[in-house]
Length: 176
Image (cartoon, rainbow, N blue to C red; front, side, top):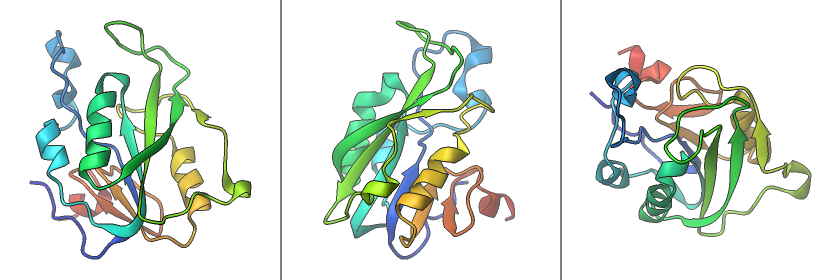
């Protein structure tokens, strides 16, 4: 059972949706072997507790890019830019052997971009670790770029001190 989203509003939303893949040919390769997935409509229907002035960092794989842009807009954000996580290792793929993921950035209201000294290169190089595990350096960058903002990590598996966590696999949901 998915826990309820936290109360209040957040200036930073960091999300890694459990996208459903429809072209999984081998049963042993299915995402559902690792965690439950959600349809695009289910992801879009979430009532994201974002502040009027907020930023969204949304993970997407290359095959879900157009769907991810739909999610950004449905959640009330305007797409601004993206970064790339270079996993430094080949993965699966139908057109290319994918070794990257995209981190889309959306803005709502008057949330400002990071100060110039907190802007970094758009490529995060970090070896791929566990299935769907994201590099810690991305969260660390968000923390540095928005130190005083209230932060929510959606679809969390683990997290940073000072962040609210939400998701089936988050440490707070595992305790219940």
